[in-house]
Image 1 (cartoon, rainbow, N blue to C red):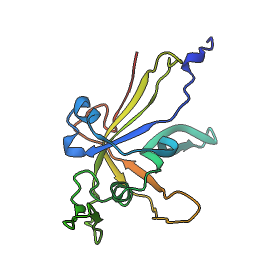
Image 2 (tube, rainbow, N blue to C red):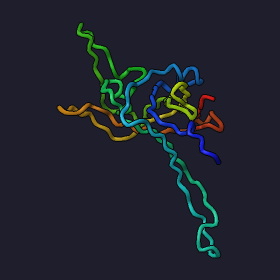
Image 3 (cartoon, one colour):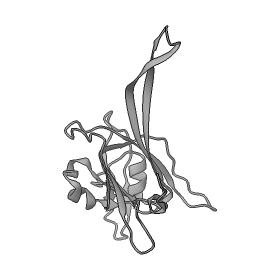
Image 4 (cartoon, helix red, strand yellow):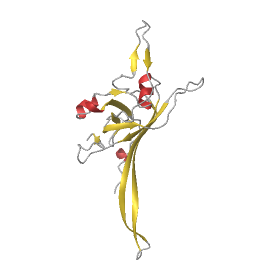
Amino acid sequence: MAVNVSNIVVGEATIQVGDNSSATDIAAMDAFDDIGATQNGVEISWEPDMVDIEIDQYGDAAKLIQTRVKVMVKTTLAEATLNNLALAWNYDSVGATDIVANNDGANTSTFLFGTQSVFPYEKALVITGKAPGTTASTTKERKFYTKRAVSMAATQLNMKRDEASTFAVEFRILPTTADTGYEYGKIVDDA
């Protein structure tokens, strides 16, 4: 196969977050709020677990069976807003039920965090990056759409004198059984 350098993709990605009940179609998801800057890009991983089916005659696996798969999205949120902190700690950062405006005349907000339900809050995500075929004069996009993302990694709020406050966030992507054939989501490239 001949090398086509326009298929080499370089560049950052953005993340939009919405309520998964609003993730009815691509147009609705494209209207989600952008969560702001990220640091060190966005990583989407597909992590299958395989089991060897061994037989004596081979002394090795005769067949591999995929027993499960885990899909993850990882990034670091570079904007230390209350919404991003709520997102990283798996609170409602979209409907803002956990972030309330104070009636103090000073235009302040409060992030209310406490005990959580055993059922984690699910969000929908849209990740937009550059697609193959992007050149200096034309930008083509690759978008990853998923309807069920749960923030599940340990993260912390840092306030340090000599570095920016950031929030590491890892989303576990869960399948949407109604979306037959694309339960985990869709990746769409501009042509």
